[in-house]
Length: 270
Image (cartoon, helix red, strand yellow):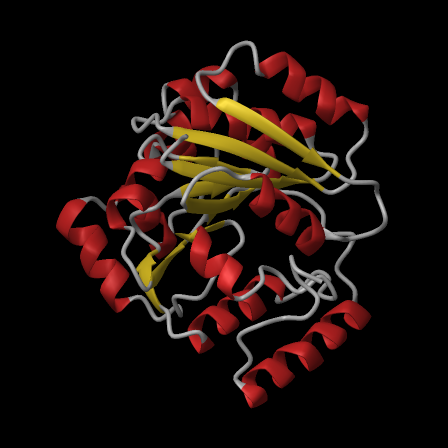
């Protein structure tokens, strides 16, 4: 059994998913499995996974469901059940992990706590330009390489350049809440099961935050690793983002806050 299960959510983005899977093959910490939570992708994604399985060093479990609109919470719950490790990292199929990504999560895991990481959003032109070789050489995390590709100079560049004491300092003083982020968070499987996983009524917009709020209600604390657990987020359209879905999710989140709910009746156990 692997020490860590990494759940990677995806939907019809095989080109981006391939880059992510190569990123995990570059990890310095090797004792992990990948569980792909596939929310109804077409055969191109399955073919990619079957092909890349032969070339990577880790186990891949592909969990798929029929395409029935945005059902990310449902497929995440299936992936949680399919995972075989005591500790789970969750990320997305458009987030390439830096080579120390899994190791940072593993080293910082702690009872009664979940980890909240961050991401660095890349523009579309750089997202497309990144090759397998750039991932192996870690060019896509090299600020000078990114600047050559046209990346502007901003404070957020510290996410890629901060190391050691500086990264720990920035983690401490960042104004961003240490919430559960679907692109980069981790926690104990037992805690995830104790809140019954994700609420499958939730669609795009706050579904990760609602899950994290129930973890807080359960008594967990969060650890901010925004500048230490690093991934670069590839650009893409968000056609599934609708005002109706966000409004529906806000009603559910409001109820969770008011009732201090821990358990969802619409999660893993029905």
